[in-house]
Image (cartoon, rainbow, N blue to C red; front, side, top):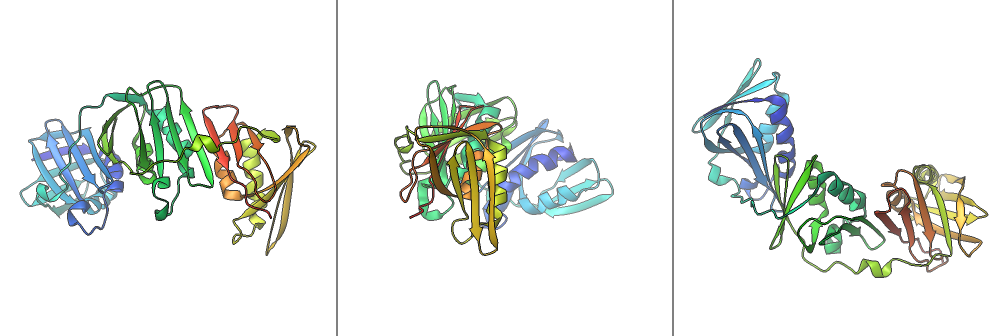
Amino acid sequence: MNAHVPKKTLADTLAHVERIIPSRSSNPGLSLLRIDTTEGGIELSGSNMDIDIRARFPADTQGEGSYALPAHVFSQVVRALPGDLVELEFGDKELDLSSGTFATKLQLMAPSSAPQLAFTDDLAGALDASALVKALGSVRYAAAVADYQAVFRGVKLELGATTTRAVATDGFRLAYYHLETGSGIEGDVVVPARSVDELTRILGEGEAQLGLSEGQLSVRSGGFDLNLKLMDGTFPDYERIIPKTFPVAVTIDAPKLSEAVARVALMADKTANNRVDLFVRDGVLQITAEGSYGRSQESLDVLQEGSDPEIALAYNAKYLIDALGPAAGDVRLSFSGGGPSSSPSVVADLGDPSYLAMVVPLRTG
């Protein structure tokens, strides 16, 4: 079986598939890439047990067949090819690969050695792919990273009849992004954060088709099909802990505040939660930090509102910067209370009301 394919097409598609296939595994089959050739096209597929992926693209093929070979070896060779066109000749035991002035032989494995994957065509739901990327990308930062935090290591997708919402929290911060559009399927699922990373890389323009089955979310976008294994566990009732009243709130440009916090935090004590202190009074927000190398401060003019004349709070600088990140313009930063037992603060994007974040201040007493 022979195939001719542009190097860019093969390399770009292979890059997405290779990211998911582990380079080393206790199960040798998981490191294999399966290649299926059909009339007029090639399919690449693989799995890491949490994500199954299949990528399809057109190619000049002669004959049909199924093959397998180590994914990362094949990917390294393809990336290094000198020519614009790749010629593949599949034999019983070897793949002859040539491009420009280069040629090599790669050992083939039995296709049955690679994971046997199934991708459904029963995808009853659909969402605008760019909107889904925006929703997932705006909240991903708030997911937990420690293994013991279980379901907090995922992003919750609330799929409703007329709305869709992505939510993530690690117990110290929370973010949600709300879409006023339904997907055609209903259900609340928790997708591992690492799977969300791969999904957002693959989602392209146009429509993303969605399907739900037992323990799995299936997604089709462009030439890619994904099966995402879902997380078990109950996601917390996050809306109950979002404050509703705020004695002090300020309005300020999000990038401007983020940059100021980052500058001041250069002097923060990295062993003390990277702490920065915020003090608001008379329409001025003062940011300070102190550590073993010195002390820094910066003052910003803000639009101040609320019943209290002033407030003082401390935050982990990274958490505050992350919360501001998805906002491109003005935000309202609302403080629900200060002191030793500070209540959560809320960041609302005034330019995009779909986004909301919550950050728990550091204890100061």
